Image (cartoon, rainbow, N blue to C red; front, side):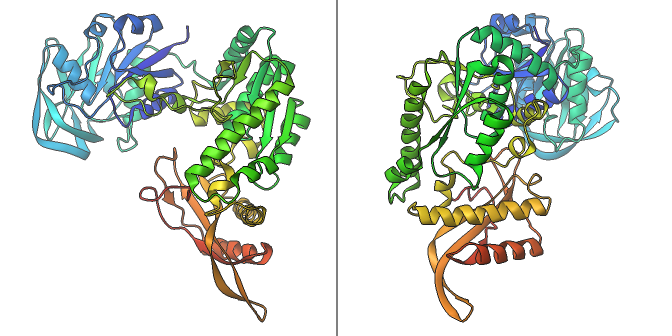
Length: 512
């Protein structure tokens, strides 16, 4: 069994960040519910357990507690913020409301030696976010570090390998937090460095072969990063037992349909069934303007088209999807059953129960950056592995108002200019997302000696880490000038270009 660190989630906004930091130490990590029984934890044979932070107070009514038996497993435990307070509370210490809350940057003083702080300077900058504090240590514990507002900014029971931190080592605001996590994972838990994408590929190929046997696998290929990497990984394992179905909904970017067929059908020699359903989708969208109606129509139509294509392709036991780890754990909340809150994520549009497949999700353990690394190691081209995010409904949500073939032409051509100029400026692979949006307004312009009354295109460029928040990118003025000039000159029907300078929040990345 692979070495791993298990994280119990108490509702912290940073829980996924903890998992990422552990994987940066080349150790596998997974997130489980806060109340996972100790017996189930033991079955995973983790090298260590981390208790995340959370918004609750340990002395509040209905505060989330972990199974107290975990303290008897003999496995190293690190509690972070709420996790530390819970550790102290359950083991006989005292937690109380702090006279002065600590939010933001703080100075930590290491006052005695501790395995967590090995090789670190006495004074450290850390990130605090708490209103409670440990006021009394549990039996057997000492306080190796303190801050201005807390004499127990870190606690430790070295004999039983139990540690707690009042601050958040996982966030980048704690400059040396990565070293603390490294010290816990490798120094305290004794983990090696076995979690690499090379080892993941080897393990996954063997696992896919064993699971699939001689049965066939069907995959809905969108051309996006996740479904493309899933296709390449499964194809490496079972080659011709995999059939990919690529549905062109008429809402794709310029050259995308041809590019997917070329890369997967011709270059990688995969079995690829191409379905051009442009007329079907555009016919059903008609003159719909409400964005939610657009999404629902596109989703339902995709299911119908994919279902029909699957029937014609023969008999399959498995449906493969590019589900990733954030999809699995998204929206996990301590308020209810996390499994009921996990997002329904399907690259093929959310398939109905009538399509009776067993699921094959080879990427469900990976974060996005890990997916990209797997794709690179599998030999997928850069334009697929490192492509910018593209919404499931495609250009439909980049056309404000009704969707017509003419309006699709305009936004598709404008979007291609944006991508082309970003690549020429060597910025396309450095920026999270850049695209064009067709607005539902027309403006007066002058082209030559004639008056025009044409469309307005907005250009959007944002920087983000995970899409949850985003800031607009300060593109160079000369690049903006080229974008405007080319779109107006090359895209018939456009006489004005605007640049979107709003961030998320309060705006969203996409306009619809």
